[in-house]
Length: 448
Ligand SMILES: [Zn+2]
Image (cartoon, rainbow, N blue to C red; front, side, top):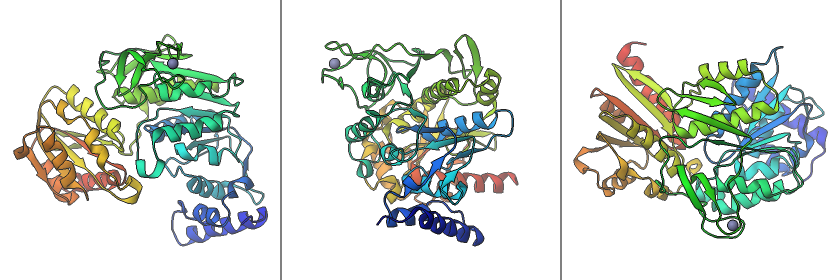
């Protein structure tokens, strides 16, 4: 059905109003209704400001939050519209626009900063004029929703063939770097990377994709891997790779979370190599908008994304680091951080198989648990607590040290029954319940 513009917007806004009056968050619902009535409903919207979108398998929410914070810090009370909570499908973005547009469908703001699901980039930006697209990485993720990663990359590539806006690409991911070739006429392609750091390896450390040349199919040769298939690569046959980045993060010191961009030293509260790649993407996008370096210093140093992405919790002298993992790469990154911590520690793994997680949990077999160092106990929880326990047992870990508590509050209580450092990994729908369970336990324990 193709509804006239006025009717679509009026009906959509009425739904948003009704939900707000009922004290409910508009969330995804109004967009979902409009989309059901008219799959091209996004054509009715426009914006009078630059639209910056962030996509890729891992790191979208953090990168979007950082960019939002940077644009929000600009002088003169700027209006930024963003979907920080990650409603990143066409229906979520449609709902967001409905909340902020006038009756003609026009959104008035200074910047729109939109986290966008990879498979929805072509759908959404067919209708909305995109000024800058940041692409972080492509890993295997939620297979039953997206199909194979290659299909996804080809979808984005097709969109990029006629796109001539700013394109910010990770030069160290062959799956992303190849997209710089999609439209040879686009002169606005910018690459970023991170200089080889001390944790880089000569051999592939974890399961990864993208080890074949996207141009000619030859096996890619890597000088080194930073993590998963991210690293310095080239094709011995056609020469693809060896990209000179426009922005490079240099002298990365992970122990002190500091690094250099263009001769200036920056600090961050976060750690982990993949977060550093996110910051390199943020810096490159900010550079396109000539953001004052003082703002970048301030945001990098002081801003923390407290949404279960490398979030720290303190309880009774123990520190817990929680990280979301929707796929093997995300989980392997947390295990890397756990191994960087030289002492003894315990791990909580919470695995759900709700629809938003993709019901297939077979990706846990691609997590490299055999690299565990100094892990004295593992606790598993979630609707698939037993599956993850079996997976860890099969990696050769001592089964007597694995404890299964499908109920989260029991798992958290057991975790904090001992002293020492803790790490927690939770998948998509598990991360918010895990945060809630941690907070509830800590506030009861510490009376906060
Ligand atoms: Zn090649």
